[in-house]
Length: 59
Image (cartoon, rainbow, N blue to C red; front, side, top):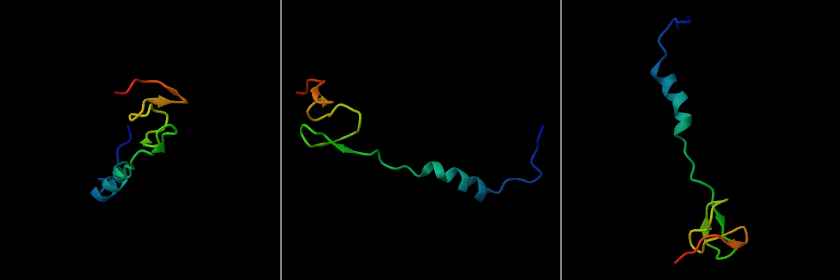
């Protein structure tokens, strides 16, 4: 079994893990029906439309 010859420095461990901490907010698109911001490929929470038809009844 392979065993490291030296202890991995804390800075190397943290710099390797830091790539996962860079979170970007999800992209937004405009609803073609009402114009509000919504997530792509998701029913609009404001009007309930998706792909040119009403998918969900919204009160």
